[in-house]
Image (cartoon, rainbow, N blue to C red; front, side, top):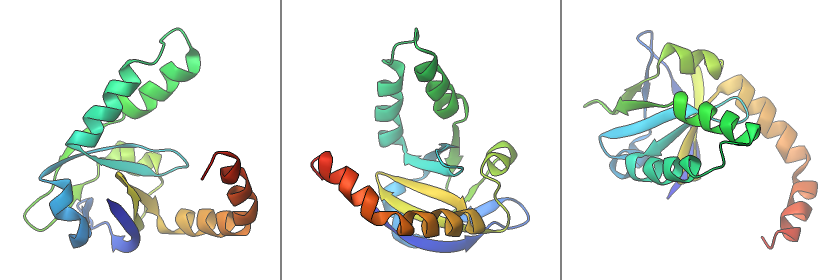
Length: 143
């Protein structure tokens, strides 16, 4: 399980150090893809295969499911974790998430999210202000 929030830098060669706490669980190869809310998602190969299988079963007759599948699947790329614990962030994903040099890596149970630090702080501040409303809606879902 991935949990926690970590600040890291993307170096000039577009490499990003994965928090050491997560490296063993991730393995040597991960999948990095476009996420939701202007961030990137990072999955283990096992979790990616499970998600891709679910996405492949969505009805292609619905435009929203086609669009979501394209967002996640066409935007995905395998990434090797090098001997120093870094992954290369491709240009198109860096641009998608508006990543500059300072990023936040957040653990969210079965995935990591990579955020531009400024975008993360804005998102987090907004979400924290709405936490009571969010909690009430989650209560309706049994959480």
